[in-house]
Length: 170
Ligand SMILES: [Fe+2]
Image (cartoon, rainbow, N blue to C red; front, side, top):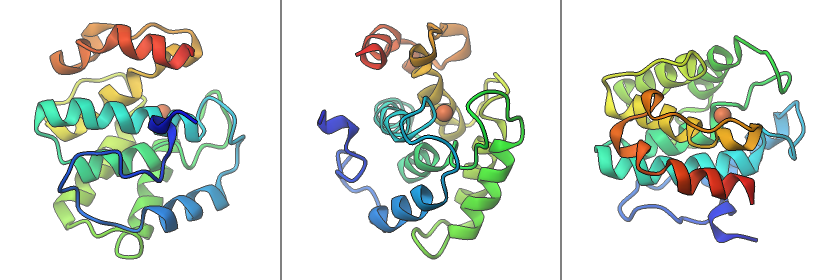
């Protein structure tokens, strides 16, 4: 397996706060209602996680929040197509898991929830952590045949469009 697709590998920046990554992934997968092999499944989460670390390091984002976004933002989808409330449900779900698998303070949890609620609205956000989450998700649009566009990305993320596009088509 491509090691970048191993969701359990630390594979992230040094000094990332420790959390129960394995317990969290088991819980998320245990309740996941759509295909694990679909376009919103774990291979998408892994690419989003990798992009989130790359972009987040460049933008100064909170790297724990961006990693949790990768694991959780599509966790409450009920279908692969139009599901406008999946981000809000993911925010509720993330709140219910805090202090069990990870420890976010109130500001971090607010940021994660805002990122998840708005992640499919197509906006740009001034907060580096929120925008890094959205960048990471958008950089993986090639998997559904859409080439990411720089105007929907931070400058830091726009540098990775070509590389990300090739990766998700592999
Ligand atoms: Fe996503």
